Amino acid sequence: MVLLTPGPTPIHPRVQAALSKEMRGHLDPEVLASNRRIRGYLSHLFDPGEGALLAALPGSGSLGMEAGLTNLADEGDPVLLLVSGTFGERMVEIAHAYRLDYRVLRSEPGHPIDPQAVAEELKHRPYKLVALVHGETSTGVLNPVEAIAPIVQEHGALLMLDAVTTAGMMPLSMQQLGVDYAFTGSQKCLSAPPGLAPFALSERGRECLGQVRGWYSDLSRVAVYWEQEGYFCTSPVLLHYALEEALRLALEEGLENRKKRAQQMYATVLSLLEELGFSAYAAPEARLPTVLVVRPPKGLTEAEIRKGLYARGVSVAGGIGPTAGKVLRLGLMGESARPEHYRVFFWALGEVLGLSGLERAFEERLGLVLG
Ligand SMILES: *Cc1c(COP(=O)(O)O)cnc(C)c1O
Image 1 (tube, helix red, strand yellow):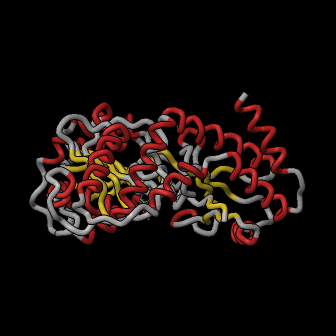
Image 2 (cartoon, protein in one colour):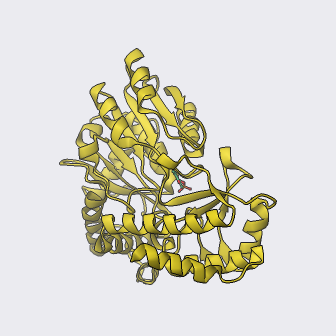
């Protein structure tokens, strides 16, 4: 199966090999050494500055989200949630479950959060924490964190960033932006198996730790394992090995190069799809290069196309939340943003649409983009 969903993503052979290493205990010196290397790699991925906590939670990306909200805000703390789709709404669900004193600022589906609206809201109320999804996977929108972060900083609030569709596929500097907590999921831009949520918590963010209503997601306990190398819980060590290898691959290629690879693939795939009658869902000025969300051509439903592709060995996603039933979502994260995979995608799409030669058209176009 060619896995072109916006997570999980295909796994590189080196990552697959890491998964079949010999089983060891979670406090085995070899595992602890791997953990130290993971922390070193994460410092390049997130660049959180001196004194930050770097680790990977044993869970999917959503655990990273829950841990951020519950460690940085206590019951009754005012929190501003910036929502531009399904994953932003997930933050609202978590804030509700933990009885945070939250307010929500929403953008129109397909459009990014307006920094001016954030500035207006922060003028009226003091917030302890502002939370933003960088790349919203349900709509394919990239939010302008570089414009929002300085506004949040000016008001003295902490900033949490869901970097699930961006960290590992583009450079990100928490200390330059002024982000206090950022997280991702191992199965997205890093193309490791699902099951770990790598994160970074700034030194300033760490001051909040220790009063969490929760046990498993208490980041001070997580720090006992990752920094003091003591027992917290039984970690999924084979997933740690795979994550280490995936991080090494990402940093060997370079984050700037990975971003360029995603952008080139995005532009090429979209231009050919547009010619076939598809249209991008996200506003042109706010397109996330790692998730291409497209409406199908007139006369065809997304489900027909998606099922036809699946029958030919290509797995893509339909819409969720505001885009449910309206779009196809194509992943360009990590190993999915490869010409050989999209060559197969266009071959299969040609079969579904009754057109031949689409895979050659794709290759020619990509050749022009790559020069
Ligand atoms: C995938 C995703 C998550 C986390 O999802 P999990 O399925 O729990 O890994 C969070 N935020 C965004 C933007 C995502 O794309």
